[in-house]
Structures are given as C-alpha cells and as structure tokens.
Image 1: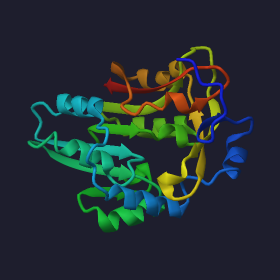
Image 2 (image 1 turned 180 degrees about the vertical axis):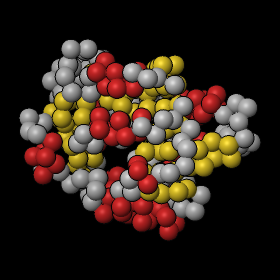
Image 3 (image 1 turned 180 degrees about the horizontal axis):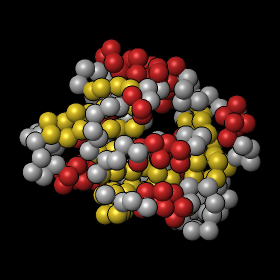
Length: 241
C-alpha cells in the first residue's frame, strides 16, 4: 500500500537523528502523565473495541489439553490484553505476567490484582510457556537486545503483534517519531519508534523457532505512516519452538 503524500499532524514521521536525539524531541511513553492516563483509559468500558482475534486464536490453540499457562506479556500496560483474551479461555488457569516501566508496575500492582507486574525480564522466575510482545518492540532503543532476553526465557511459544515493517524488503530499519493525537492522553504526545526490515527482525526469532503463522494486525495504522514513499504494514507472528 502506498503512503499518503499530504502533510498530517499525527502519525509516524521519519527522523534523521539518532534514537537518543530523537527521544529528546519527544514527550515519551515513560512520562508519568501518560502512565496515569493509560491506567484511567484501561478502566473504561471495552464495548465496541477491536479484539485481537489472531492472538486469541493462537492462545486457544496453545491451550489445548492444558490446565494451566504461564504467559509473559512484555510491555503489556495494565493488562488490557489479559482482559480481552481471558474470557475466551474459561477452562484454563492463566498466570499472566507483565513486564513494564516502573510507573506502570507501581499503578498496576496496586490496582490490578489478577496480573503479576515486574519492571525487568530477569525478575520473572517462573517457567514461561508463552511470550507475547504486542505493539512494544518498536518503542525500544535496542529491540534486539530485549528479544534476546525474551528468547533466553526459553518459552515454547512466542506471539508478536502490531509490529510495523516495511513492505519493500530492501528498506533498512528506520527511526521515526510517532505523534499521538491529543484525545488519547489529553495532550499531544510523541515518542521515537522503529519501522523494521521484516526479513531482518524475523531472523532473530527463526534461529531457534519455526514461524507457524504470519498475520495482519487487528489495528491497521498503515495510513498514518509517512516514511518517504515506502509502504508499511503492521504485522503479527506466531513462533513455536
């Protein structure tokens, strides 16, 4: 899909700077005001929301003949995904663990009793069956380092979703600034964000895992990405060891 050429106020815009210098121009995800607003938004009614049916389907497949699953939701906010998928897995015990920033861990631990919150991957001591990373890897300065940390947990299953990748295979990983509309947080926010070369980012997973599924994400943001004239897709993947 070709990207719009017209100017727009919100979306993803190419940065010519390093990650650190791009971050200095942004009001980032680690701002406590964003954490508080995200928490308040998470408590609102979910009626009419888009559900991640691909993730739900993969978890239902994984849960066959199991009585319990230990899931690590990396960058999982305040457990929105847990609330979305748990109703579709009524016959299995789910131990849902989230690794997030300190401000999220503080608010989540005090207010979301059904989820375990951690501020780093190495704090997760129990065996992890499934790792989920939905809409998060692109916001990390060094996503491949985090991917290696997640792989070191040796989960049997990995689900990646809402990952922005270039349609053209020759495009290199590119830093952008994502500008978020005021109605999301109550003020204009922005943060650095990667758009990935899909082939390269997938190599990090397929060294030791087989990709069983590749799917388009339920949240389609393609029309909001302005990176030269290159098309961008938001993709999801299911890997099994």
